[in-house]
Length: 557
Image (cartoon, rainbow, N blue to C red):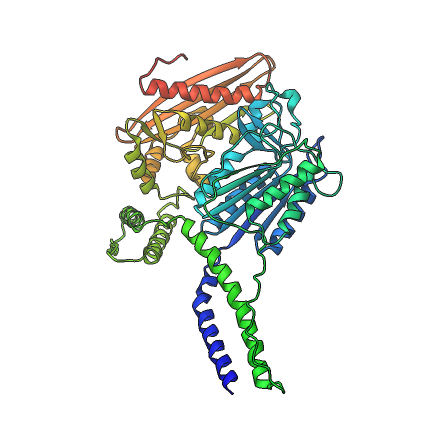
């Protein structure tokens, strides 16, 4: 009787302990992975990457990851998948990016090769391949607490004959804070495909991931030993780490706490035996909870703080001003907007901000004549105010969509996106210009908005052959809260003798209502321009236009 009472008290204590530890389970970090394997390269196929990616994805799913698998991906598919990974990681957790396929370095920068890459020279790489540095930027932007990047992409350069540089393998990249980067071989070295289903590196990686109880450093150390052994020392995997927490691919099951042996009894008591079984099950559950709580505490300590309430208040105030402006344009009666209150939580501020954004979208859609701007990736007023605060002596410049015209039987419409990209890239590299509507830094510049068909026709009434409409520019500047707009048109004409290309650069000062025009042209005896010459001419002529506009030099056309 006394033994039964003691066991009952102990079981009650364990039940209370489990209830205390249970909230730690709710905080368990989400694990998200993007796995890419490219094999079907035209004329330079690889045997293992698709198998490698498939097997890695299946193993990660068994380990609790939410996996997105992409095989034989094009450049656009790979970029969209990376953006999707960044968005999913914005809520926190552990991120993992794995790539198997061709990878090269050009001028010290690493690129992952999609299956639709059309690379004829080094100049094409940055436009046809996916920058590894850009992938790191997307992961850093997500702000989650831990990222793992694995690149089995150091095979022989398939484009070496068309490259000026003879550099092999991938260049060294340092892992950002909270990340670890793992390479199939050391920087500047070449990794080998395997003879079986998997490559040498991924075969050993799969084996190490299945070993329970090893943290991430021990996992990659085991991979390194296996690869060196399999290749007889010709290939040495390498890692760069800035982790600030521990991680295990496969947890080791905790040893159950030994249950105290009850006093010997001549005849087993059924109730006592039932309490023993309940005690053992609770002890095992408590051991599991303790281990998970320990890991969660380490990850929570490393977690990046959420957006401050002050930033949310500033965004909310900017959006409310935009609602007031739109209501004034629509001749609607202003409605008082609730101001941010002291003591509001971040969740309350985010909910209020989302409601105001919905009002802005509805007012833009219901504006007389329809919306001119169909999509914006950021609040235009907040973007302009932030840019003016950071610009200093730089010109704050917004860019509207370009116009193109091809006169002849062979229009190169597929060159248009590359021309837009080159234009915005050249702007981000200038020290005297701050482009508001293109990403600043190492991210690829993109247009954050598009015009509807009627408004774009109104903007370019003569297409690329004539200037943009000043009234439309004025309206766009008002909607974007912009002081200075740039509009660029490219007009290409060819005949049987030669081809000529014109670049027309228009800079509109919204405060003065002035439109200045700068033009340049280039002729070539052949009927067609090489794409590299075409893009370089667009970049050079736009830079020359800005130099003259800013009074740096006289025009040369």
